[in-house]
Length: 211
Image (cartoon, rainbow, N blue to C red):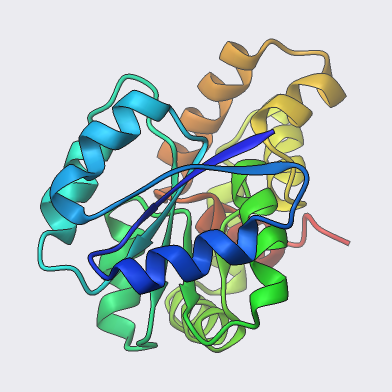
């Protein structure tokens, strides 16, 4: 069961998103909260996923508060804006998703499942901007050069990561403990010079590691 906390200062939005997710048998909305109560609510209910309104004035402080928890959840930003500055700020702060609020309601459950499994989820208009911006600064030869820094095992992990597998699934596939997979992912990020799984996946594609 995927536990979710919805954070938004507008009670109507909180109720609407909770209603949309309420029909999914494998998702439980553990709580909804306004921004001032968000960190305390997340600590109390220990969700796997937090859906966070990007327009709140306290977004930066909130992201730091969530990131400082012992076992921080995956945070997916819900936004009405596809402005590149907001996208960069959200992903740079550690969000694992950036989804526009006009996303059809029937897609929210799938979004939550993917974020819970470790995927980085972005709406189609957002993904085009993210990919274009990233690939503009990374040539194919540079991608190959960065990937060449990895060990054979790290390349195996990178390929599975780029295919969308979570750390748990990667460990099962390669017969590695979760801690070992996390260590490999940290090493991959450091050697590739990236901070997010999406960036690592794009470099893997750029270097020709993916089919």
